[in-house]
Length: 201
Image (cartoon, rainbow, N blue to C red; front, side, top):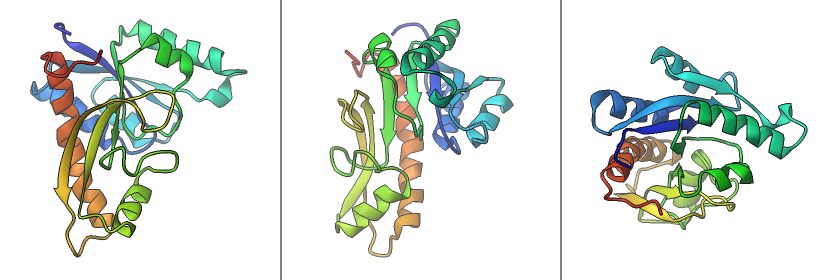
């Protein structure tokens, strides 16, 4: 990708990773722009973050549509309208429809708060991940950016960052430390994709 990447971010809650991507675009650390923010939750703070930066938002849920295809087609039409060429999931709590996977092959990224393939899969999100990591007695954890496919947290891994677990870490302190890594890694990965250092194919 030689031109500036046009990103749609899908987020369900706070959107701190969305903010990291917006900051990366505005500070020039990645040659990309967030042009659309999609959420299934109209109360998501991510929407406020987007509006503050003049980014178009779309609140959409599969429950509004008679079937998955009509829902997916509405999503697609909005993505095409903004000429989106990369989708970044940032705490998005809905499964991506198959039609979107088909229309954006190797173009949908997710960030996960653990070292996949460990501690991934359905139900492994947010604090649940950090609880599981600590319960398993792991000595390290980290962050993974990966391509998505039809199975939760399963697609090809693009990059990881690691951190050592401290003896006094609890799920909350671990979550905060891992989140800082997420905010660094996501923009870095997009910059490397733009530079051709990470291939999506």
